[in-house]
Length: 119
Image (cartoon, rainbow, N blue to C red; front, side, top):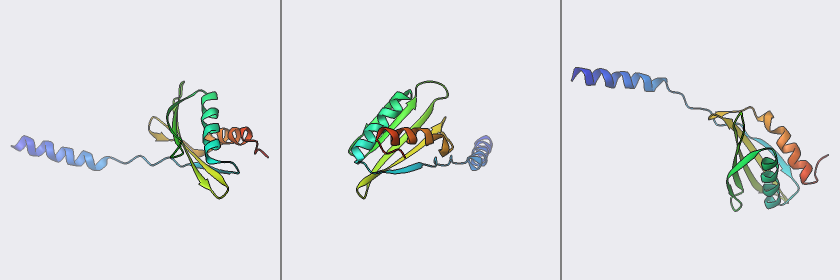
């Protein structure tokens, strides 16, 4: 009985130390293109960069891709209609930890170039 109480107390103390991992901060960019085209080109950019598309849902405008080589990033893509165009949002994690959003800028720049919207 005493042992069970001590184990329970220890479990409660350790549970209080656990912290939640913050959600990754997204990097967003608006495009003057149809949401379907933006998502399709985003998947093409990721595939060309060595990512494996794990899930994609065109109706919801969402996709998930994982880098097939080290360091093993995971990128989540969300594309939503916005006015006459679309807004793409990318976020990335590595080992469950969020990555700085500026690492996604090259992917967004390439997406913009492929859509013919680069400055």
